[in-house]
Image (tube, rainbow, N blue to C red; front, side, top):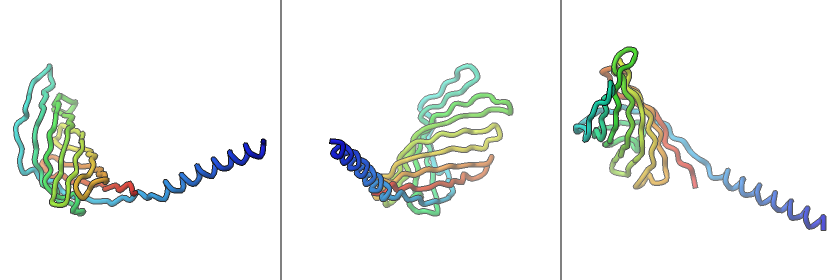
Length: 163
């Protein structure tokens, strides 16, 4: 009886070990990239209002050309942003968030972003998305910065979770 129970426990432990070994064998790969973003179009916000000292913009469409060291992250990026402007210690500041779709001839990335605009006009944002088309199953992570009046530069990585 004890021998059967011990055999069952050992079999279970071996099964769990084999499962973890199989999971570890599916290797996640990471491909780093960097690039520059240029605004090439856009539209007025769908909705605007003020509440106290905060200005709210909703549905602001932007169109950008993305030029990256990895061609999978180059193409036309269309964003829909929401922005709240408010007074800060050094002047007007803002937080923004929204959705994006970056397309090129081989596929697309769609996801979300969030960021901020400092009183000096500099911006930063982080974006995360999932691939479609030939990028299906991949994920992208981006961090971007723009000094006041300067171009937006970004770095990031494409994550392939493996099979």
